[in-house]
Length: 303
Image (cartoon, rainbow, N blue to C red; front, side):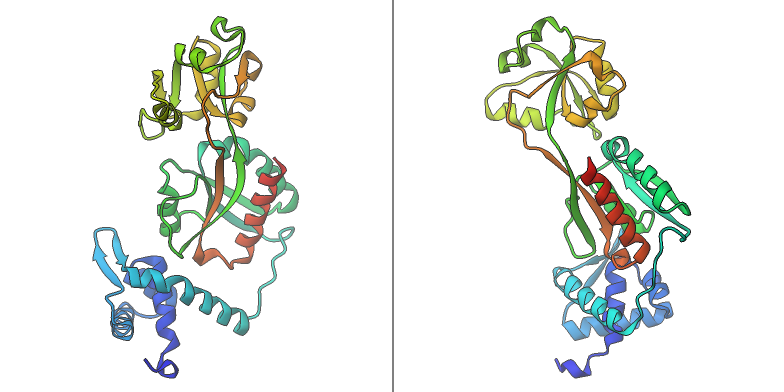
């Protein structure tokens, strides 16, 4: 390959195809016709001696060669853009913009109030649209579709250059029962824990959570009495029954009736859970989005 003979427009076309996974949308993004984008894809395939993108029911599926090329090409284009184009100024105090944020239940309860207050003070012209995120990779789908600008939740399972993540928040597990529970008056050892009936939060209906995995390594099992998808319904349920639940500490402390709960360290080893800020590479350099991502990270850090 003669590097000096490479048309840099082809790299911009590749970057758009990698992000959009659709020839028509990539053409709109780059500002060319759909046939021109198809022709660019053909030239890219010849240039790299690889199909690069395969058609599927979900759009264009990048090959491994395309995935390997994605981040180096994107980084090179960002450097060219920074050198050629003046950096736009962004003043949150005077700007008017709308930000679409995907949130899992946990950050919606724990982080959102502080974020909204910070926005009100620092960017009074900003609007925030919050979108519910359920499955682990549903944030990636929303980012790919352009429905959200960023999300806060557990890190996705999909790893390639188009999706960027940053850990911003961590929490540890606790076990809760109602205050005055007769079986837990002397603490929460493993035998006491296993003698109780339990509530499991499972957004996708799985009846084998992290606690059950840890217990299985010990050759033990617990009795699951209730499985439900709503995280913040659990403290109220536990407070009015003799059941126990193992969940994140801030969920218990942010619940309306947390004074009715007794909180213990779980009798099995559980690693803390990290929540990540997740965004699409197409918005990585956008000044308003950069500012808001930093604001989200700052508010998470303050917790």
